[in-house]
Length: 88
Picture (cartoon, rainbow, N blue to C red):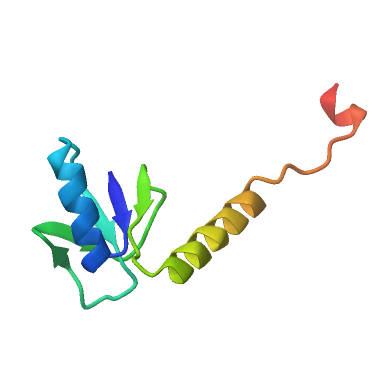
């Protein structure tokens, strides 16, 4: 399990996950000065690790992060138009 956001809200989520036997492998954060949170490494480049939980406490920021990711992922998976010639 991975978390995006390494601050106060992440601590609450880590506690909750650990209480239910879940392991948090690492966190991701844009703040390069944060390298560890609750003895869990904080990384700064996300390379598709999953499952990923957004652990940003501010509701507006969390919503914006998720909407941006969805938009970027959707663009990444848009299939180019095919013609019947291509399918033969």
